[in-house]
Length: 200
Image (cartoon, rainbow, N blue to C red; front, side, top):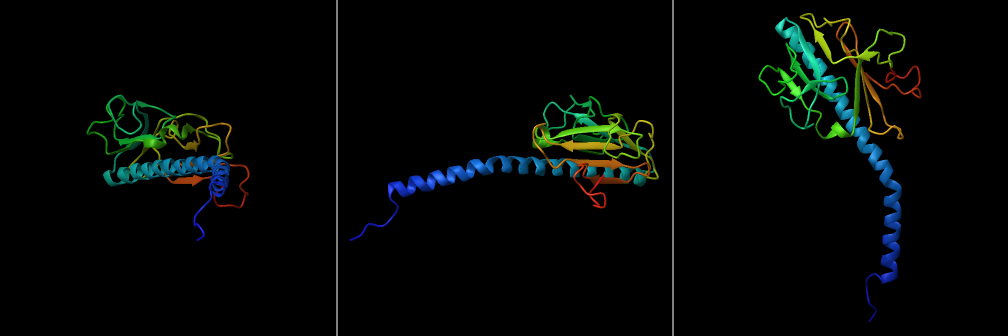
C-alpha cells in the first residue's frame, strides 16, 4: 500500500519558498501599515479641527484646538505640553497645558499607538502659492462664533503627517486650514498631477 502525505524533502522545499516570499513581502507590509497609521492620524486631526469649528459655532464663542505632547501616547494626562510635533489634540476654550486630563476639555484624543509610527509637523504659513510649505511652528488654531479663524497671525494652517523614517517613501498627507475655517486633506507629493483633486 502506498503511503500518503508529504516527504521531508517536499516539506523543506515548501518551507523555503514560504520563507522567501515572506522576506520579499515584509518591507511592503511595514510601509503599508505605516501608511494606514498616517491616514488614521490625519483623519483624527481633521475630525478634531472640524469638531472645534462646529463647537465654536454652536457656542458662539472662541474655541481652540491645541496640539499637545503626552508622556504616554495612549493617555491624556496632566503632564501634557503644547507641541507643534504631536498628533494628540485637545479642544478647549483655554490652554490645556498641564491639565489635559481636566474637565475643561470639550473633546480630546491621544495619538495612540500611531504615536511612534507617524511624524506630525504643524505650522503657520503665509505662502498661499505653495500649500506644502509649513512656515513657522504653530500649536493652536482658534475658531470664532462664525467658524472662521480668530488667531489669523499665529494659527495652525498647515499640518504635515508622514512616516517615521527619512529613508522610506510613505504616503505623506497634509491638512490645510483656510482663513474661512475650512479643512482640506491633500497629498503634498510632487508626483501627483496638477489636475488631480488630491494634490495640495
